[in-house]
Length: 348
Image (cartoon, rainbow, N blue to C red; front, side, top):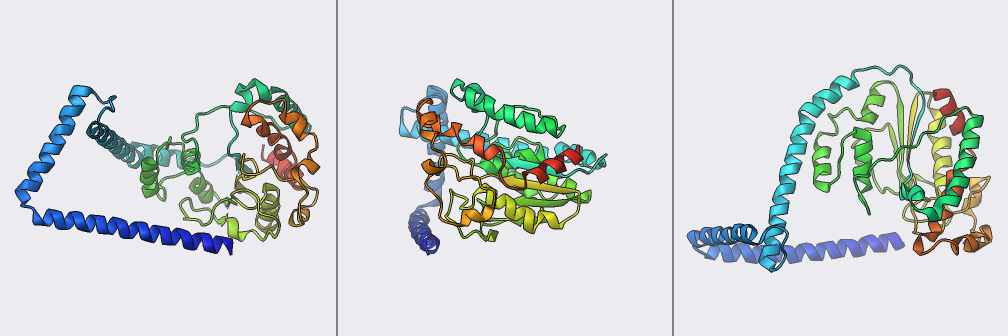
């Protein structure tokens, strides 16, 4: 009921805004129609002349006057438009040809592939000394478990194309191998994505079953051509809502493996976008031996992690809570962790 009410209010606000904009444009149109065409052209030319003179005299970096600021924004918009056009030309030209030639190479092996987008954690765990003890303890446990499975672990840092939102740009960049760092470039990318040989289309052509698990997504646009996409409304979780994705990662993983992944033979791609790691919507959900327990009323956060307050006091500012999140969510996310590890072992 809450979601229906939210959608209703949002639609009403959008409708009202559309009416206001329509009335404004209608008034401008009527005013322009009443003017002599020559006056409109002369006024437009004088305004643009002022913009050019202002930029030439004061420089692009100055924001003194309103018109100067508008001229600056107009100049930046023109620059971004040219960059997007150049990017689109490159994508549809030389980059498309090079990627197409590369995509013709057949894979030597066809292992199962697990691609996890652990959103909101990055190099800060290594760069900030406050996280060092917790991080080293976590990595020792992970390294020990991987050594038992004879699996190597490699760490590599890369600069994210987006910050503070816009994860779809990071997703597009990782799947295409192209830096897509603006919404305009992403719109250009969407125009050619169906023809571009990105990772998903390459795997599809080489006999893979491709599965995307996106608990935070309300719908799928079919941009990448996965065989199956699981979004928020597809999960039959009756427990308490958690975060912006409503479903804890442990539940999402168990549901996807049980109802989709296990029903298809190898080779397979499992592409998962995490929710539980996205601090700080709510305290991290507990990790259980049986995911069915997540449907029952959950104990308070401090009941499940009594040592959390003591740990939090050792870390300054609001970043303190993030030290506890990686440890529980990076280890045994669900009872199928051993299945994932064994699949990765065989793939290598």
